Amino acid sequence: MDAQQPSAPPCAPPPNPRGITHMRSRPTSHYTVVGNHLAQHGQLSLVAIGLAVHIQSVKSGTVVTIKTLADRFPEGETRIASALRELEHHGYLSRTRERLPNGRVITQAVSYDVPRHAAKALPDPRTAPRPRRSPTVPESGASVPKPPSPPEPPPAPVRPRAPEPNQPPAPPKPPRAPLPEPEVHDLKAHRRATTLLASLHGDDPRLLLAERDVRRLAPAVAAWFERGAAPESVRNILTANLPTEPLHHPAAFLTHRLTALLPAPTPQSPPPSVASSPAAARPHRAFQTSCEGCDRAFRTPQPGGRCRDCRTDLQGAA
Image 1 (cartoon, rainbow, N blue to C red):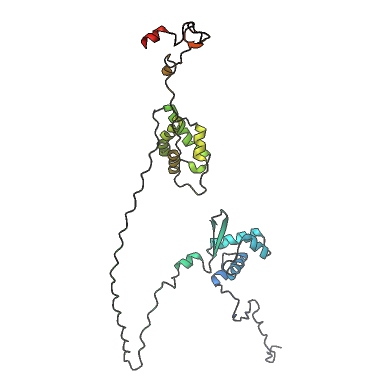
Image 2 (image 1 turned 45 degrees about the vertical axis):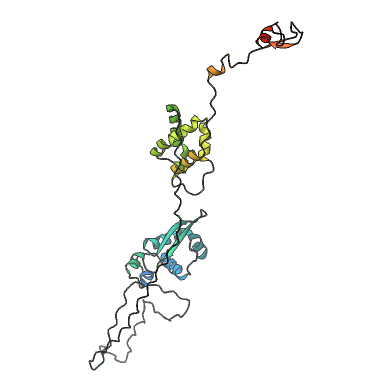
């Protein structure tokens, strides 16, 4: 019973009982090259790895958003959004928001086949210096003669520059019109002008002025008040029909309107002393029905008397 049985066949080990067997083939079309740094990433989830492979396989210009990916795959928007954030964190994806000229906001996505920090460290093949090839040395040890360098081309002849025609100098720009100033300094009007300028940003946020601009423009607004413009009228003129593009210099814009749209001065009324003087008033002349000399009707400042033709004092003077 203790003798060994050499005729019993040994047990064969099972072929690769736990590992996977690859049946590889080399694709010739419709394939995407993915690095093992992504396929075997130790910190990315399986959803993020599969999503990165899908994004790298689509053509440039394909719309890749959370909604389009949720319509394409069974995963919901929450898992897809989480996977996209993972890819952004590890440098495989970047998303930036851009505003179009029509005001619409879009998201621009860029996919990286290697992480962004690794892509910056790699040399640019367009600017990297090419390695120099060593001259071929024959087996006998004789050096290969260097080919002669091509002769340098002769320098191009310098053509004389044609004289420029006499052009008239550009006319100087007209000086800017100065800001209007009030003729009489009124502290109360100056305060109202300062309050109006400091509150213009309530009508439009782009009209927010600095303190020095409010002090510089306040006398001009006071000049408008002096010419009979009401505060609400000045506010409406300064804030009406504003341009749609951004106002980079609101103080310059208000300076132009305060100067170009300045109302005309109101006509001054005569002094009260001149208007109420007796000489300026037309004398009252009573109407007489008959002259004492010729029975003709006439006007006279006093009742009774004679007309002009019958007055002896006028005839004697003539």
